[in-house]
Length: 130
Image 1 (cartoon, helix red, strand yellow):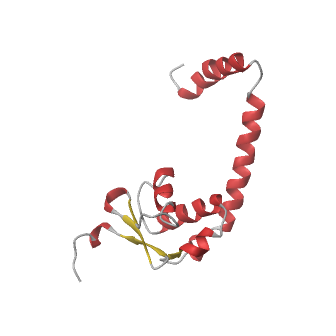
Image 2 (tube, rainbow, N blue to C red):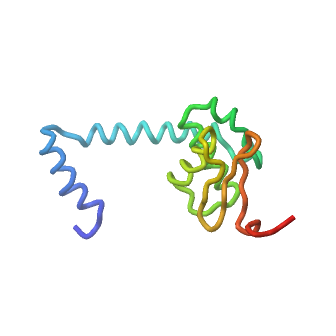
């Protein structure tokens, strides 16, 4: 019972099944299988070779949310932004059409929107003047 996986299987899943009054293992397995297949599909649609240094916000807005997220995640990682997760992707996604034009990212990186383009400022660019 030291390992989280064992506690999930032996304690949490039976407690959920008892509370719901039905079996959940098969539906959870099916959902995981669907997500795995969709993840594979999205990975084939978005590659680092197809992503420019700046992203066009009107083009991003035309995409479904899942594809926006995949594009942004791949783009951020390709630009070497560390520790990219859900929060970071959503912070950048909020720049696409929202009122904010800047999002703070890990390790001093910043995403910005200007002239309908998203671009990144690396930490070394901070505080430097032209």
